[in-house]
Image 1 (tube, one colour):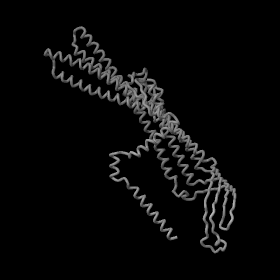
Image 2 (cartoon, helix red, strand yellow; image 1 turned 30 degrees about the vertical axis):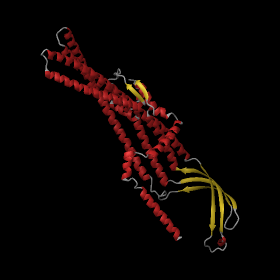
Image 3 (tube, rainbow, N blue to C red; image 1 turned 180 degrees about the vertical axis):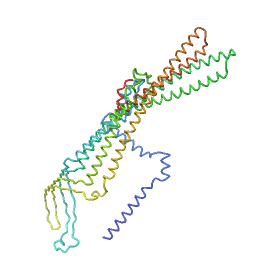
Image 4 (cartoon, rainbow, N blue to C red; image 1 turned 90 degrees about the horizontal axis):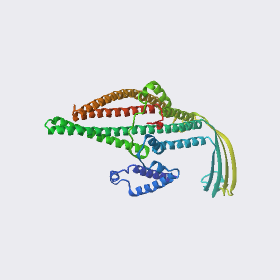
Length: 491
């Protein structure tokens, strides 16, 4: 017996030593090799083969590669086309849809937890029996080696298990949460597509207007060069005009870069490679939309319709159901009915001769947790903290949403004022340009003065276009925060 104990101790020591060594194999040399050469070539080849099999199996359940991996081509697309492409090809929306399937499967498994549990066990073993010491003369003769074969059919049916009941309720709440998260993802992506579309159109328009200003600036420079040739020019003004044109060229390049970045973001969101987007125009009747709905009404609508709040509410409810489940696991009795039939075929025994027996047992068991029944403390303690955190998160999201709605509503009002003033300035600049051009046609002005007026008019047009798109973006954000589905927006 002592020899067996010592052998076991030696084996345990060697095992612990091996485990300790296995936790310190990330040597500096190994890490340096990883930084220089990357993953081992054989490991990489094995990964490629396994990935190919995994992707091939995934294709049996749907054309995931064609829908989410391939990048389509769109030379020019309107907003409706881009939103439709995003709803079909955006991977976040696809993942949200798969989460619904996952929640359905988990709910079904929770229901299975309250259905009958049936198991069949077939066991075959070889027994070596010998009596080492006994004061029974018959047992001293007991020594045998024989096989035993047994078959057991067991059925268990929960009659009362509060934790399983709460688990079913929690799974149903999780399924509703996955559906709301899908709606939320669709609206998030639709808003991002719309906002990025507006940013792209804004950058393209600004780039075009800047090129127009650069052309007008070139006309002024050419007129100034003519004056320089006649000795009436101003070298300081010529240098200033050249500097300003270079500044405009830099701004135009930056606008073009923003346009390219926005097109890339649209491609990521929609799964379509897009070459250009059309210029956006202000929809009729949109200006002053914030006057038709007060900030209080927008807040009330957002708190009711925004999927963000629905998801936060379902998360809080789910955390409370998890708390109740934990309390039931810790303290609630469990009543279980069971029945099993066992047939055992023993080929021999210590006393000679085998046996074939069949037992049928039926009964009801009542399990009452008294103290630390699972040996892991009480699950209700962390579950209670998590439920409080979920409730706190709900109130935080509520306050954040209200703040964003009110700020966006106020921003729309200020942008409306800016748009109104810039429109007036553009109208005045247009009148001044037409007057100056008429004077030039009558021989009362110079071409350089006309170019200056037209340049000023171009500047005001740029500001009007900028404020128009900013107002539309603020309107779209307010609609999004209030819970509107922007996939149906028409711009």
